[in-house]
Length: 236
Image (cartoon, rainbow, N blue to C red; front, side, top):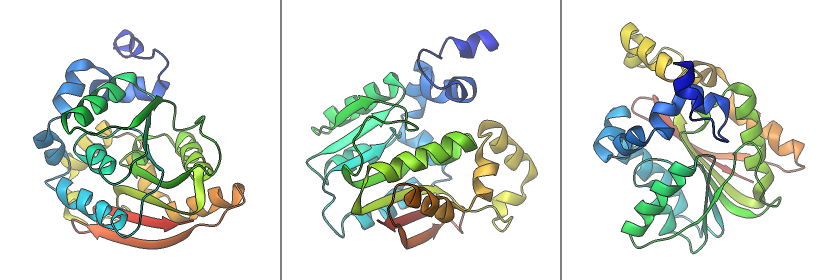
């Protein structure tokens, strides 16, 4: 097994190659998970609701120069490309950028794509009006997550917007949290999810903003599927 995941390092973070090679780096996995039915099933049929909730915020004001922080399976990227003339898409995995580009071409849309690690991006400070993070944070180890959040705030302009779609806080309130076998299966597939659900994300973001001499205000948080998922809007 060690040799299997090590073949996918190739400039990718070790945690990505080790824990998620089967979903984001292996060609068959990328093909399989790029199907809408699969993604919607993983999100318990909530993909459309989550996407719509995020897009509603983006329709309230011009998006300006927008950054999608790492690729995401599904219809998110073409939808974002339809909202701005300058969508930047970055991901550490070249295969993810390739499949995202194919999806955009199919929709006759485009984005400026660059292979970068979300923990350390080459973009200038305060260079984006809108930053979108879609189900990335729970897949990062704590230290990597902190660096990615810091980078997101570094590149966000004062007066800009940060949109995050993610899992909700785990307080054992949702029925799915109480299904032991399901919870254990999810924790095995998502080894950093439990830790993420214990974090105070708004507080972490505030700390990152202060580090870069910026302010960040929570503007809206919508709980979906009984709080199992959430879509959050922050104003810089």
